[in-house]
Image (cartoon, rainbow, N blue to C red; front, side, top):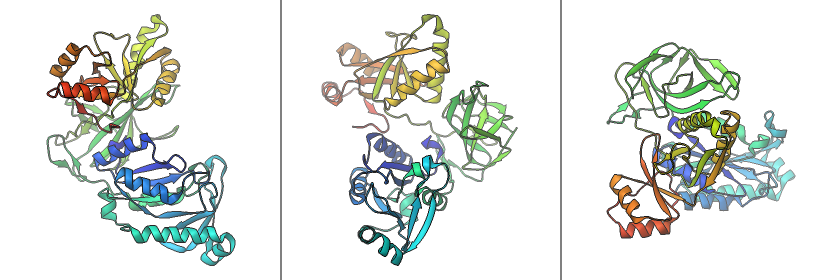
Length: 430
């Protein structure tokens, strides 16, 4: 998904702070050069101090947080918000149940805020001044270069501070620019149409059992019905069924421009990472894969539904819900599902049962680290006969992944076999 964006929002829980998954996603943003806006969420619940959260962001992520919006009141006692560019006013909000509509907003002058909120208002101004005076301040070039991250506070569930965040996205997010090509050079925004397939989703409409390929327009103009070429195969096809998708709503799209996302219905030949183009050939670099840290063997509960099992596994693999790993030892009826987080397994279990009518069991493995290796490395690992490691093939691209129980077993094997290729994947926790 991050391959399709020009800017990302990093959501930080006011109580939990920087979680492991957040750090991994930030690492991918940094790798891809995606600027990041920070939204510290759930400020209406008890949590950590604002200054401590900013210090953690700078220390652990190596990026300077620059407040654009600051909270009035501690976490759990949110009195309002103040904008860095307008410290003469405080914004007070009325909560909206479950975010059903925009929160009611009231603007108080500094004098009114002092009178009504007293110490909370004065403390907010002091903290904001302290952070701004000790930091570099906001600079658009530094933001786009990934050196600073604008920071907002609020409570998304009750729509407090969300409008300020969305308005800032419009103002701060960089416009679409040239996109690097796999063999060097770039595709300029003004050239002929090109697009990147960044997501595939099946069964979004259960009544029709369709399959949507989401395409980010990278250059030129997309027009519904136009013939485009798939770079991987060189084959051309028509884009007759094109929609924009927002939640459960779909709208036919006739024209789209760089930065827009188009959903192509039932384009069965497309895969995640595909480049589409017209005119001069364009092919964008392959999408990087996250480093999986959770592994489980999938087996159908009902052997008679093996066909549905194989179809479901293939579809989830295409969509990138999990990475599917196989080996001669385990066979097609017992592929290994590799996930970044355990919640992905919940999605797999639900979709296999309800969408593909093939309930499965997941037998969790003890591995926690994956490294890219080659045939020579796989042979060395096989001879080592490790009880805490094995090599599996990623089905989507035939890449060999060496799995280890933990970093101590990995380090021990590396010391004994320094010539073996063991290359980290993107966003590896260690």
